[in-house]
View 1 (tube, rainbow, N blue to C red):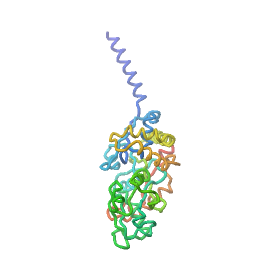
View 2 (view 1 turned 30 degrees about the vertical axis):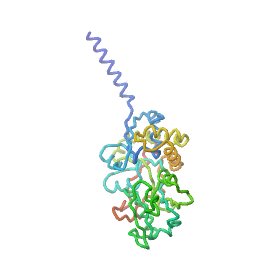
View 3 (view 1 turned 120 degrees about the horizontal axis):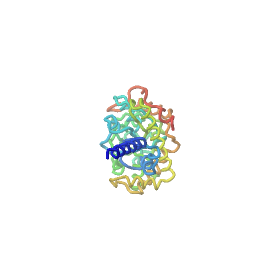
View 4 (view 1 turned 60 degrees about the vertical axis):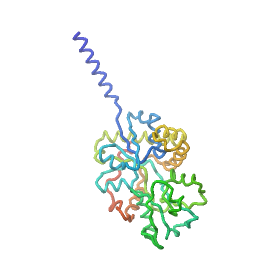
Length: 330
């Protein structure tokens, strides 16, 4: 009986050791916003087994209006987050040492969408108008742009009136503002579905105006990068994620269905998600995950030139805010 017990214990130890050797590395990803096509690459990578192929167990945590990814990771609630570079650099200057490890979005989707029938066909028409602006870090390129145009933002005939816009298109529809903030992959589509035609709109892309900012990138805490095992885990994570983005580009309808399957709120239809995935693919197109330093410098200069009436994004050139340690291994 004793020999049998010893043998059983020994066998259990062998099995435990084998399990430990093959255990997947866990990764918690905090998204910037709710489950939608904006994050298709990550959900596709999970659904298609790309993370599993890299020996990763990835938990994807949706965001929302009351969730700041920068605060979540600072509090230990995530290993890696998606966020815009403006928010990441602002958080870094304020004591949360975020570092960009990869940049899936090569292009910008932020627009200012205006009604021609409210008198806006060029930037010369902004003076005296009310413009809808998102805050919570999204306002920085707007204020940099207004500074470049030498337009005051306190109202008046020679300046613009700033409307703090909610994340909807109501102010444009209800004529509360001549222009509003939209994203190519979301609110701009809502404006079109509300009955406006493209010919009735004047659309400005912030990047084309020279005040573009890098949008969804992947960020981790600087101290975590001191661990080679963590760097290796993030390299595998980014590699699988970019594979997910490539799959989404080739199979947008399937990717949209994966998003719908993961959205517990049911807030968006499959048609909405297909539209969003197709538009998002344009922003990821051409990206291999490696941060373009020229785009990084444009983002930094935009933020330094932003004269926000509330909190400045950054007040000095960041140091150590990016690394190639992860993407070098792709």
